[in-house]
Length: 348
Ligand code: AMP
Ligand code: MG
Image (cartoon, rainbow, N blue to C red; front, side, top):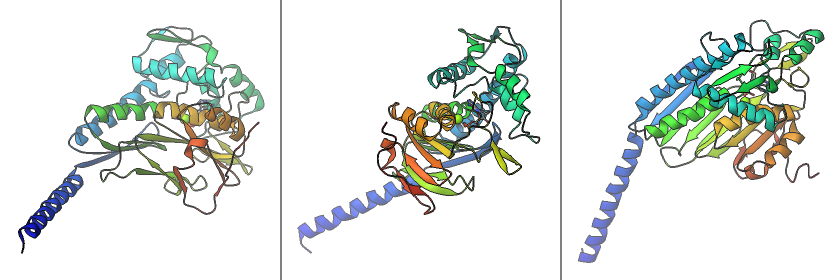
């Protein structure tokens, strides 16, 4: 064998060894996963790498801590204290303040389509509880009078509900806040690849261990958890879905779901099965998914197109799929029952 050939073979050998070592290191990245039932939903946290174990534990603890501050049923929570001490200035934790401020911001931005003070209406309907009910119109009228973000006063360290019987409900935003908190924990622990799912609020950190994009499934809204109708390729991104299939009950052939229009007091009535928001902030995406569901397709699409770097996917009852302009290349529809509506929507 010539000297040249020997050098070439030797180089190839070295490269192969380097390549195999690299692959081996990738697959050897430690994977840690944990599940818990928190915030009334199934929480899944997965992380890869040296800091994974600590990060996953801290994440689950943090989600629990957030629940203990912001749940309306935990008697020691800030929200419980506010709801049960109307007209009193209540000192609250900085974390709760961040969520209340963001919730009020979205209430203003959506002119009340999103409203964190609709607890009286949510309690009246009881959707997701053992005894949901279609309330009497007079009861809805009453609860509507006890709903309104103008009744929520926020100061530096304290908050106050200025009218008795107004109740805070952060169910439309708190999971997004929790998902973003998990991202911070992962970063602190130098975790480069992670996946979080809080009952439909999905957040991915970095890309997958093998360097490819995560593939996030969008649920088939007719079937609920576990069935995927489309896939979105994502890196450092969140997908948050609000849908009428998540919590609902049926009475006399009519479906009543958990996303309430704070202007009518009834579950938002439109032809949407679900709205998914894709963005880098889960906190904002969560507030937006609920808001946009209330707005419906036309108003919601127009609203989303005014916000930079936030995209939306709408699925209607006819199984038509509408994508905001930045999303067209990222979504792959997997189920042929769904029709992608192409072109420009709602130009005027
Ligand atoms: P999501 O699944 O994020 O859309 O949140 C739905 C939850 O948010 C409901 O179960 C209620 O607790 C709460 N909610 C319902 N309607 C609204 C609304 N219009 N604005 C704010 N929160 C709402
Ligand atoms: Mg939401």
